[in-house]
Amino acid sequence: MESLQIRKIGLIPLDERNEEDRELYTIYVRARDNITGSMLELQKSLDMEPTEFYTRLDSDVKFREAVVQGFTDGRSARILELESSLIRLAVGAVTRETRTGIDADGGQFEATVIKEAPPNLQALSLLLERLKGTTWSVAKEVNLGEDVVAREIDYKMLSKTQLKKLLKGDVKK
Image (tube, rainbow, N blue to C red; front, top):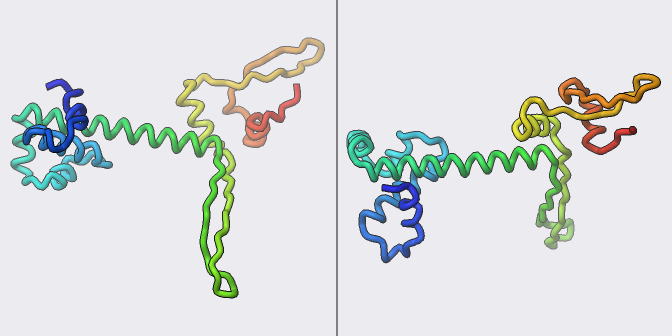
């Protein structure tokens, strides 16, 4: 069974799926939505006895493919979510929250609270390493007397204050 076929079952209207497709897609979805990737949790969410679950895993190719594809797709989705969170943390964010409350006179009011999270330098550093590799460096002109020499400086050698200045673009040439 081709792995894409399990995903395609989701495109078939529910009332048009045969019994086998319904079962395979349920197995796929439960595995995909299993946050920890635990076989024990999957077995429990499918409401199967351990013996039945592991026997089918060993002997039923379609069952095994649905489990593997579900875990694979779920892991990919979680990695994308974690990368997105790391990016938001690295670059900072402005969030708006609308809150309701009761004022001193007993009337209701709404207030918009704006929160600004500054860029997180550890997250930024980690993200740059992951995206560019460990050899990423900051190019900076350094005056060494008569000759002006452009040198590359490993960003790990810079202080947090220097990194903040670079992040803000506050570097004099």
